[in-house]
Image 1 (cartoon, rainbow, N blue to C red):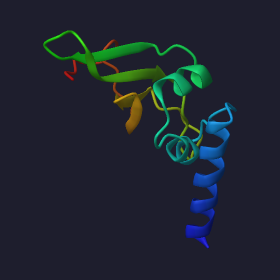
Image 2 (cartoon, rainbow, N blue to C red):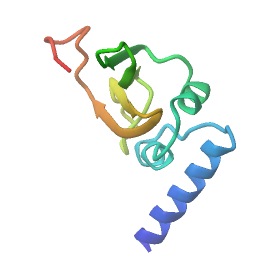
Image 3 (tube, rainbow, N blue to C red):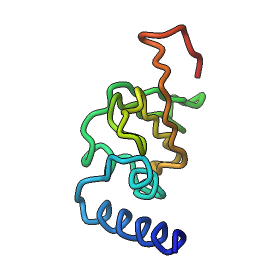
Amino acid sequence: MKLLIAVLTLVLAAAALAEGKKIPLDEAGFVAAMPNASAAEVVEALGTPDRVIAQVDRNGKVVASVLRYRNLVSNAQGDYYRCTDLEIVGDRVVNVLFTNVDEQTDSPMTF
């Protein structure tokens, strides 16, 4: 039953993102909506990120980036993660990271 619910959540969240609707902001729904989302779809649905970290090659072309949003996604208890990072490679989301550490307010982090 749990697998069925997870699959339905994944399908519905992906369909909503494809139609340009809102992305779920609970942890499970958010992760389910992200596979293969484009950077443009993410920015259209969530707005401008609080921070963009870009990795460029020798020619100055962006090969990967991280879009950081603050206080956006909540966990199962309803508490918000301080940071949500979306790793973008080839204009597609390939990784989602939730953390409660923010280099602007906590001890320095390196990427």
